Image (cartoon, rainbow, N blue to C red; front, top):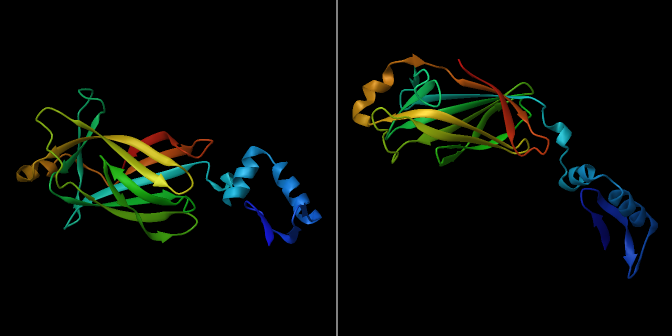
Length: 209
């Protein structure tokens, strides 16, 4: 049989019981002489240097079935954040996620504990487009005069986890007219830096555009 080392392929020679051939021994010695990061890279087949140093994420929401714009209201300093995103209970939202550069791949998204897959629609070296479906069926409406912090996360295949918090007010479906005034926005743009271990991302900037 062949001796296989993690991430290094087959050593290409046989073992005869207790003596391994020189090629396998040299390859094994070379592997275990590597630094910790290099061992991880070769074992996983993934080079952490391939993760972009800066990743830009754009998230847009449109209410189905008519791709209706989503609005936010400016709340000043009354609550934890100055902007409140207005969403409707019992509704479905199409979410588009644009990631720059395109080499940073995303797999899923979670909004307030509701997880859904992100499906890749297009990709080139400059950017990649993903879509997902967020359903607010079963979400309780926000009480008058209150706001809800909603945890947002996007799982990347290699760059780690993107996390942020939106300030949201969920309106009852019978008050849907309240969702159609305020400031409409095309997307929320984030500039992020993956941490050294590629487990989380630090947000440098957030912009409503």
